[in-house]
Image 1 (cartoon, one colour):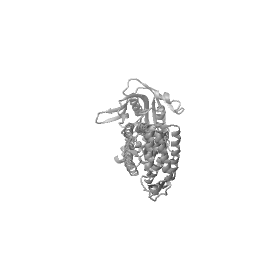
Image 2 (cartoon, each protein chain N blue to C red; image 1 turned 90 degrees about the horizontal axis):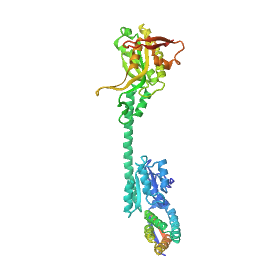
Image 3 (cartoon, rainbow over the protein chains, first blue to last red; image 1 turned 90 degrees about the vertical axis):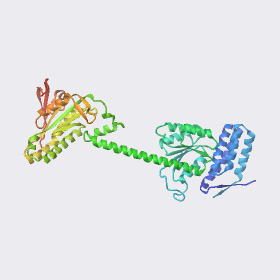
Image 4 (cartoon, rainbow over the protein chains, first blue to last red; image 1 turned 135 degrees about the horizontal axis):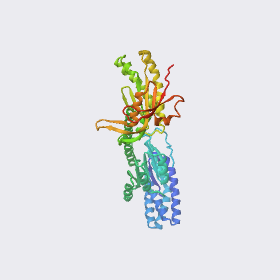
Length: 99
Length: 385
């Protein structure tokens, strides 16, 4: 499995554990919304990922969020499913370096 | 709605500035709230957070912040609606609002401008940009607050100056009421003259003319000041309005400029107090000069004309009319420590006047008048121990 290294500002260190717990919850929420074919919920979740990811320094979260948001607009289940899988894999392997 | 605790110790790495500058961060994503709050606290600001539009409005009404960072995309009331509502309320319209939109959402910015937003931030949020924008709005806010503080201080000074000036003409409590009723243009005394029922009281110093022949001019002025101080305090004690001070006589009006439903009683109490307050002064003067002095008073009630009378160059807030003329004549007739009252006023006061202390003078034709009027005399004891 590839390892993703993300550099985060040192002063944000205290916030990161909560940030990751919420991202894990987000994966579950994405899966549930896809199962329910709730594309509006998927769009909103993708939009939220897009905004919060890069703010903390996790560009990949924002990238995946935009893909989910766009795919939700066209109800593209396959693309969303792939994004969720990639998101879960990313969260499982990302390594944070504080500077 | 919550206040996020800053886990970092006070001091290290934190700038000790913007004391008291309060920012409300609104975002339905708790991670964005925490992130923005963290950055702002590092700048020494006090941060509160809200997770939706309703909580935001409640928070702003109960504790108005100095700045609001408002996310656009929220469940329920979105950021545009919240922004529009806050900007349309006079109480919150001046609170700067920074709308947080996504970078590629130009349409949101246009809607934000229409909703009254003061500035915009893009998600993902760049911390340098956030701090720069917030600090700019903070400086504007502080400048505006300072200017508002100066304006308020100047306004208070102006009103206090007017109050001090008025207090020399009307009772201090009346002066306060006048100041509070004044608009920025001072409408109260710009109005036309009007007819209203007044109680006019004229007071005059008895025996003073002879006394002045015995004392130096400078001393006369001092004595007059003593006398007028006593009478003025009595008039103000009962919220009378002093209209005229000439020679050694004083004209006081009641039920003007504000309604006093008990104006006859106020006038009577004032007369009593004028006599009793002046008695100790008269006693001192008598010991010093050998002359007896005292106060003679005439009081009458009826319809009079009140208003600014004069020319564009000199105006006087004046009361004229029958009750004033009658009160002046009664004052001239009154002996030392005697109060002469016209018939209509007596009807208002008869239950209040001392039993056996009132003498009906019958119908009297006053100088300059064709019809006689009923006059009553009340002698007030001014005995000084």
